[in-house]
Image (cartoon, rainbow, N blue to C red; front, side, top):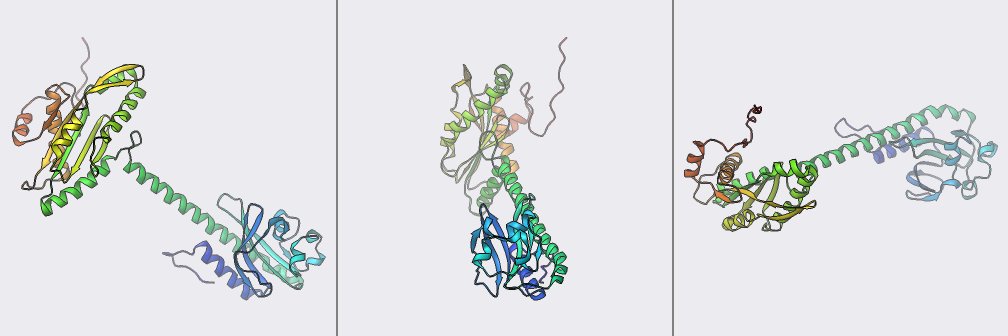
Length: 358
């Protein structure tokens, strides 16, 4: 038999072909096959046929096969003389093929259910000592079952990995891009800026007093509001812009090739409105900070540009919220010397200690 390397294990199909070639050399039969049960049919997946003209892909009724008797226990796995075996009497396959002897072993799928069989038959009877081959037959059928299990586990692992990637790329609540996606695209946009001066704009959006929504109407209403606003903002994006949810009620917009970024920023910041949340009309505003890198500016890192937008966004909150503030050098200097608005904690810093009422 051919053995795959540790780096390239045999697939089920490769192993099945190798098993049949090996068995064909050990015990010449009219036909060796690996079959698959598919509903009420038996499909011959892999065949080594020297006597019957059966090709891979041949389909026969499952109930008409010899294998159904072997799997059910109505007949043994090794039948040297089919004519002398009561359990084989009346099987339709005996009328379709000249079968004098039979060997078979079940192949199980990953869930333990029957996948199919490893089987053989020949036109004439075999010597009674053919029974000595049954352990090898069981071993190879078990090997094929284990390969099916390994392939199923690998497929499940790939599905889980794909799901994890999808979750990493898509915010579960809003369906927007995640922080990881935003950072990846932002780094790409900044690489283009470093190469040819292509403009890049980032906006950070934070809802004003969103905590009051959760505290007064509940978290379900807060989630409904975030989903509603996400759809509103998506409708204002240009093709190619990225709207991401960074967490909580904080969002970001990446505008690549942003000669017209100010217009986008104005549209996004102009989201003060009245939205129906549960049975209550609630007026919601957003504070928006904008950071832009022009053709002649030095290329910042992604974190540096996000920090500038963060500074501008908190400046918008200090000014009363519901507005857009653009970052510049003067703003950075002013904000650095100001105390924070009450209750505001910048990302990456611990929350201030709670003050107990007197």
